[in-house]
Image (cartoon, rainbow, N blue to C red; front, side, top):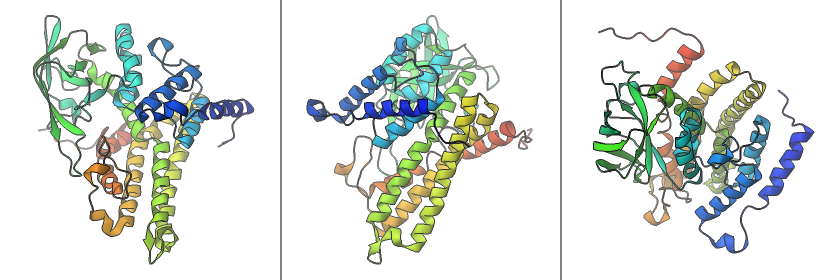
Length: 402
């Protein structure tokens, strides 16, 4: 594998680095709330062609020529300085690429721009009680009544529903069809009468997940993405983007760097914990997993740049499984480094609006949270079946016939 960049791309890196000298913001702009500062810099990134490169200008993106190497350079340099780039939200990261592939022109014009800026927040309505790993068995119904869909049923584990303006979700529109058929992909305004959001309190004390109940809630008939009854196919595109977000190697490297900082700040027998041989062996093992993920990502990147998509798909399916396992290793090691402090809950005033904290006890929350992504975006056991059956052509698991 040749990890060297061409002179042309190194020159491009220089332009990115020059642009990034504008972050953090200075002067009067530096006094603004961080969310506003990020929005300002992200807009400048779009104008410079470094942010939302694959999104057409008509929808608020920078519409740059496809260049996987340039994209990689931008990722590397933005992560180095912690500058805001593409929003990794359910709207910008999952819905937008789905609409670009399946949405109508009117849907793209209406929903993509505010999703990119974060002005309009989205949640995902997939899982239901009894329909999690077996998502195709979902029963939440949408019945067409004139020019409106009438929604009835329940969704669960709906992240950020309490803050969302909109939901993209799967609803059964043909109840007599086979379970993978008869499902439609709908866009649901969360302020409609008949929609109720109830919090699910987490064991760490936070509130990010919710139940959502639909009781004769009505939405426009045009709020369907793709063809009626073909929502399962549309949802596969969304899940690919969700799994890619979960398997981001840059986020993993950032988490490992935080772990190293913690190991330097904690002590063992009066000395920094990072000097303890046992801790060092454990950190070295974890970094091996991190580097393996980075290497796999580079191989996928190289194959994609050459158009060899078959060489991309199998390791891509492994990204989510491997990365969630590695993130658990990082969080567990950090939790063990806390020793007795690991039983201390963070103070309420330490938590930000997302339920996170920068204090050492924040690792307690991160450890508990790290167990969840193995379920999100398709549970690990389901993912392994998909990899075996579709990636390597292995026979399907035996299933009961009655």
